[in-house]
Amino acid sequence: MAEQTKRRPASAQQTAEQGIIATTLIRLLQIVMYLILTLVFSIVIEWVGMAIGWWDEPGAEHSERMLQQELQYLNRDFRQSAIVESPMRFAERFSQNFYDLTFKKTGIQAAVIWLAIPTQAGSGKVRKSLHRLFQMVEAYVLAAMTVTQIFGVRLAVLTLAMPAFVLLGATGLVDGLVQRDIRRWSGGRESSFVYHWAKKALYPSLILPWIVYLAIPVSVHPNLVVLPFAVLFAVSILVMSSTFKKYL
Image 1: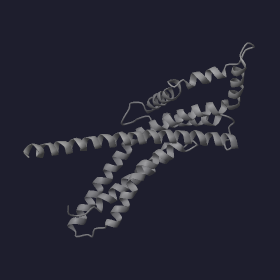
Image 2 (image 1 turned 135 degrees about the vertical axis):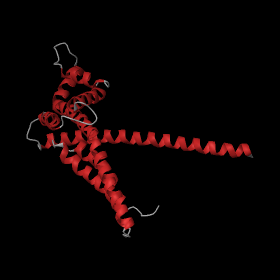
Image 3 (image 1 turned 60 degrees about the vertical axis):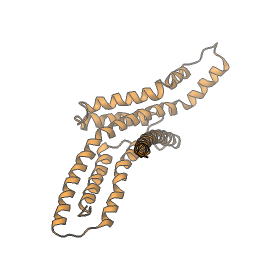
Image 4 (image 1 turned 180 degrees about the vertical axis):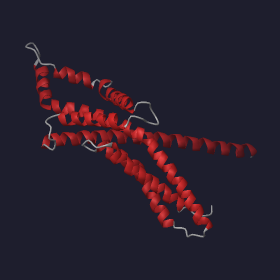
């Protein structure tokens, strides 16, 4: 009986550890799938704009101008970071690595270069047909490749923006705990309704910046997306900590 009693806690601990590992792997897989779907959505939006004529620039020039504008924002307004020494270089390197992983490692870039080479007199019918087909969709292919680079730049920007969420969140937590102590010692009332509504706003304030900024089809300054959600995140933590129950 004693041996069985000892085995049960060990088995329970092993099951819990396996559950944590499985949950972590599932979350990571969900994040990867989300990023892939967001990238595909961004490319589709760019293609639709090209086909319908939403953009002022012809062909792939719209996506190329967006990429230049995104890098200009970094070079002009993000010269320092709490994570890296040079945000501009980090974003360029991150974007290039993401591009290499998506197109170079998979052989897509080599296939595009091969299809773009003009056919010669001795080329076969299949080679000529593929070249003509590529000429019809060349602008869309180049736009997709450029949008992938933009996606990488924006991923780097959001990564560099995480300290802002941490700093504002810590400020909101400290302020909220001070207000909670004041309420506790002054006999103030608790409000579970306000607490739960603030809790509901916490996760969207962390997730929506990644959805909005990564998928938006036009160039926008990162501060216009990151700062409002960072402030919402801080306010949510402030309200949650200030309205938390007075006695544990």
